Image 1 (cartoon, protein in one colour):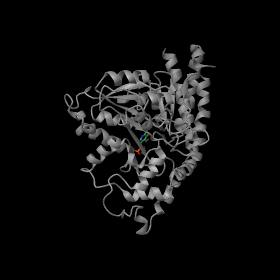
Image 2 (spheres, rainbow, N blue to C red; image 1 turned 45 degrees about the horizontal axis):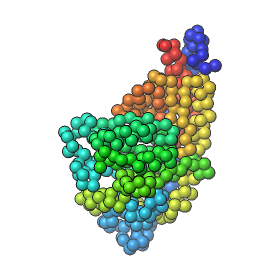
Image 3 (cartoon, rainbow, N blue to C red; image 1 turned 120 degrees about the vertical axis):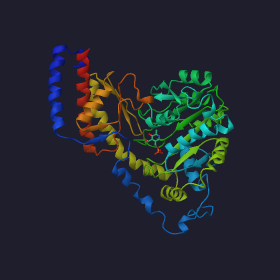
Image 4 (cartoon, rainbow, N blue to C red; image 1 turned 60 degrees about the horizontal axis):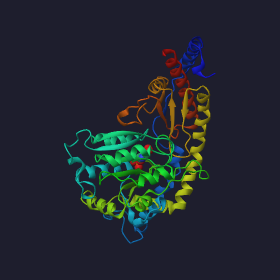
Length: 431
Ligand code: PLP
């Protein structure tokens, strides 16, 4: 029976029963963590071979004859740029390989825009009073990636929520803001298997994004393609249009910064990160970065090239990740069915990426996260996927199924399901 159809006495007796079950769970003193999207140990084991692909001095000579043990090559080795170009369907000249993590690169792009300006436009930080809220604005499809929002928040950039249905951000709203307000300088996008819903942008959304006519000439789309090849099933995957191509076709070649990294292909924090963009944007990046560094970690770049070889190598490797991850997502989908039948939650069913969104009844998410914590299961904080940590509906919970063992995942989900039931009954009784 759906909870919303129950009488008050039925709800009261259900609450008593659930409280007993909850107390029994607490007595187990569980210690489970489903809070962050980290690969599990078996996934990490898949990349151990990368540590032994280089051993001799000759191995460290690049295909252009560069000794990778020494300084230089700011934009990254040609063979590494070619590998990333293959992955992103770009030209190697459009690729700039930076350090160990894409988040750092995204921060750098905003910091550069703030201090020096985008392609020599007025620096964002000098428009009006520096750091005054509202001087610079970013659009934030929600729910989104909490660490994106932390970056913009740290600069005092005002963040505007944009609803995010399964086909991508609400483009009517995006167009209105971008085309009418010159203080809107950017939008955060995770176009494929978005964090946390796992949605992929439709062709229409990508085309409308590429055809924007921004009021600000230095408006940029931050296209974080973090899950570009992170399918759960290579036979049944989402495809998105190539934003760089679409922007070029629409006469907006410089409007997008695309980011990828190999963090979740090999070892998080020990991968390589790349910016893929127009020739003009890459030239500007090189000009600015030349005063910051002589070059990034070429040995790491070489390790990637020797380990993966080409796109086919990356695909073969990612299929092994998929084989480990798909059963975990299926566990979640099958356990959550009960919540659907009771009419107290809905959830997303992505075909890739690292997350599932669980939407409780309004006003229940914080309570569920607290109940879980008190029963030994750590979840991402409720509201974390929204700018300033504010989920107006208090209904979203991000589920990260990759890190715990399969057994732990099942146990954590059982606790979570009980907590959703309990929080829902409490709310219905309050009403
Ligand atoms: N972008 C998104 C959308 C992510 O979900 C994550 C990690 O969870 C990252 C970026 C972090 O990537 P990196 O390790 O390259 O900084």
